[in-house]
Image 1 (cartoon, one colour):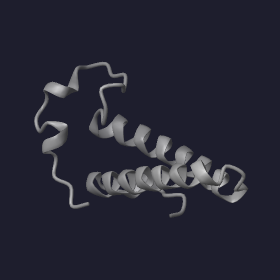
Image 2 (cartoon, rainbow, N blue to C red):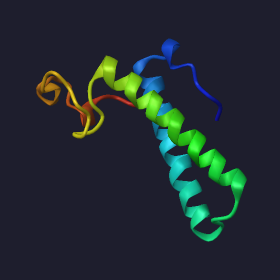
Image 3 (cartoon, rainbow, N blue to C red):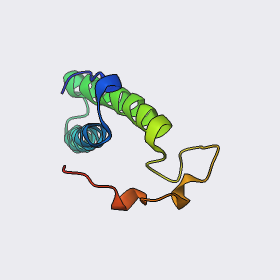
Image 4 (cartoon, rainbow, N blue to C red):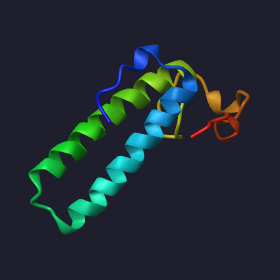
Length: 90
């Protein structure tokens, strides 16, 4: 995974990238539990976490919240389709 240019991505592509980075971050965290001194893994974890944060922020500004923790001006959970009903091929 490299830095992604999410400005040209569609909604499903962005969701797939978000899931990929979330998975990678979790796997790296599990690895770091047993290898806490691995500088390369620490750097990769930090890099992916920053990319994920940026990607999620951009997604949520356009398509609405991914979690209940995202601040918004309007309670968009009531809009259809509901977040878990949105189609994703990932």
